[in-house]
Image 1: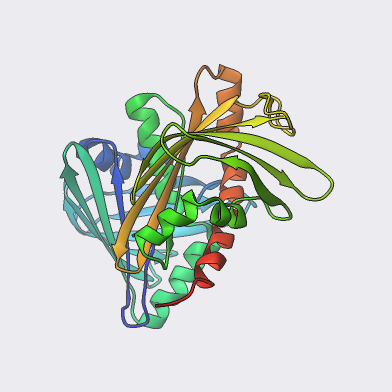
Image 2: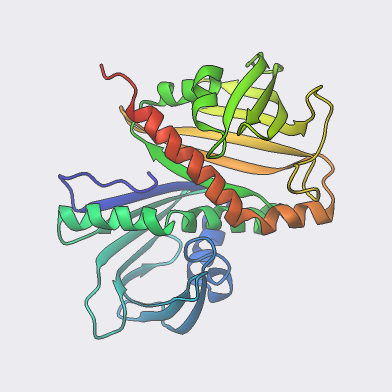
Length: 322
C-alpha cells in the first residue's frame, strides 16, 4: 500500500516492489551517499549531521524544502538487521523531543526484486489519520517514488518518472477507468481542459487519437497500445500531433522527448482498494537534451499527475455502490 490508515487502526502501512536486489535497496536506505539522492518528498534535499546505524544509535538530519523551509529530524534505531529489518522511532525534531511514530521496515527478496514492507505505528487511530493527511499534503509518498527512480538509474542507467496513488475501488474497476474512453476522458486532462477521443481502438496493437481543449487552445495526441493485461497492467506510447494526426512536439516544451512510454501497474490492496503505479519514460531515440528536460520537469510532472489523480478520486467517489 502507498499510505493506508483506517479509523480502527493506529498504523499506516506502505509496501512497494522495487526492481533491484535487496543489497542495493538496503544500501540506498542506509548509506548516506545514496540516501542524499532520494530521501524526502520531491523537491526536498537533506543534510545529515550525524548517523550511527546500530541498535541505540541515531540519525540527525535536516530536510530542506523547495520553499526554503528547514525541517529538523531525529531518529533512534532499535533494531538493525542488515538487508532484512530496520526498527526505529522517527518524527522527533531533536534528541530531546518525543518521536511522532514507530517504524518497522522489512526488506524481502522476491525473485531478485525487493519488497519493502514498512509500518508506521502512531499513538492513536486519530493520529494515524491526521498523519496520513499530512503525508498527502506535503507529497510524502513521492519519497518512495524517488527511490524507485534512483534505483532505476543505478541499475539500468535509465531516467524514469514514478508516481503511486491508492484508490478506494476494486482492481477491475480501476482497470476500466483507465481503458474505457468515456471514463479516461473525465479525469486525465489538465485542470481547465476537457478531453475528447476522435477515434479509439483500445487493445494491444490498437491506437487512439484525442484532443484536449480549454476553449481557447487545443492540443492533440495519439496513443499506441502495446499491452493490456486485465486487470493489472497497461502499457502505451503517447505523442503530440496536429489536428491531422501528424506528429508534433509539446506546444509549451519544444525540447521534449518526441514519444513517451507509460506503464501502469494495478495492485489490489484489498477487495475494494487498488494502488496504481505509473511509470513514465522517454521512448525511442530521445536526445540527451530531451532526456535532461524530462528529468528537470519531474516536479511539474508530479503536479500534473497529482491533479489528474485528484480528479480520478472524485470519479471513484461518484461510482455507484453495490
